[in-house]
Image (cartoon, rainbow, N blue to C red; front, top):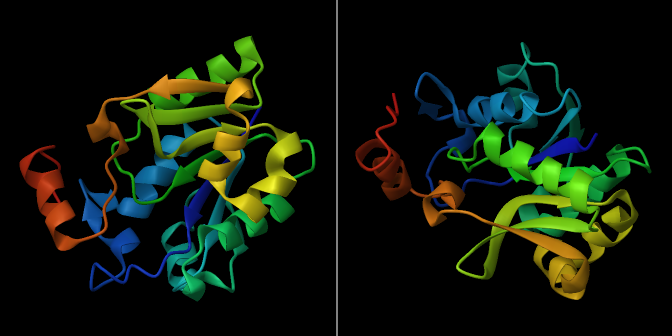
Length: 194
């Protein structure tokens, strides 16, 4: 069974406040993502950076484990991927999520897991319109040492022949970065952000 890794170490610089603590339909953005992950795996790793203690405390009632990216301020996702790969067991496959994508559903993640088990590729990657956009992606354990060196998208591009692509509606891959994105969640998706 793949472990779910949630990258939550970003600085939220474009939001003006810590976006992962913003309320989305009665829970924080981070809590929403964690609840989705726990529906598909009992092993959920959350990689923290900025305000790690605060975020960890917000998840005190959730059965997840944590790893800290002390280099989060450089803004490179690869540093969080390195931390995650080191925290996972060497035989763990990684289902990678970003903490700021509140429209990812557990059904999407289950579909990815099924594709991985049935077709046995090295990667199951998300895309929209034939373009790899952002996680969720599922990586075979043998790729984890490379993941932190290259990043997710370059690794997928290097292994296209061993990758199964999941084509999603672009809205499902929506991420929250700015106050305008929060308005979009309210007005287009009908999610209360209070």
